[in-house]
Length: 116
Length: 112
Image (cartoon, rainbow over all chains, first blue to last red; front, side, top):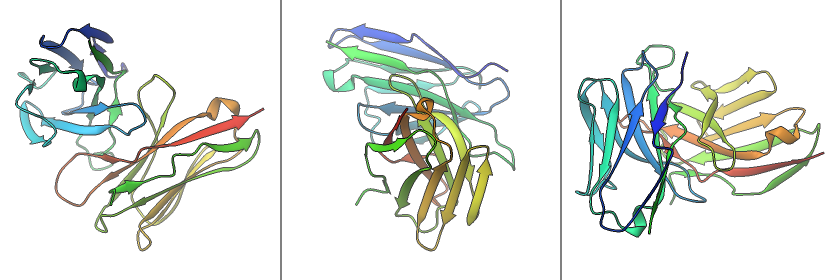
């Protein structure tokens, strides 16, 4: 059973550039989440998909951020016109919608973004 | 007021001792609670989930939940140096939303 995978693992970009991250959830998981974590803080929720539908978006998710999950499998998170404040670890998690474990979220290794 | 609060630590315990990590939350209607372990530079790893008042044991880990006091704790018995990490408390609030709200984590140091 492979876990959640994320690519790339590291990304260095210059301010103003666009970046895109990919997340592949655990294969049978229909729920997918994006979080952002900065040093010394816990993960902060960004957005949530159930299958291909984006059902929740945080107010943290500015217009520069967009996420998709076109076929209910992998997801992408794009940040346009990156700013230095976007530097963080971007974490993807997935969960299975079942009675016994519907809220247990499993994280991928994360993508560390550095904006210079 | 932060929604999920944890003491940032570090909490230092000797090898073999019991480490006790605590978390309080503000949403009285919260139903689902999780402990994650995060090693430096790595992503969070789910170690315990608890949904009902009382204790839940899994190996050396025991999660304790007291909804009346809005308090959840994690006990680690026979602490090992490899347990040294940041422990994150996460809560799913009773809002109908699926997101988890995390505390800032408690750093645990287990000395040999």
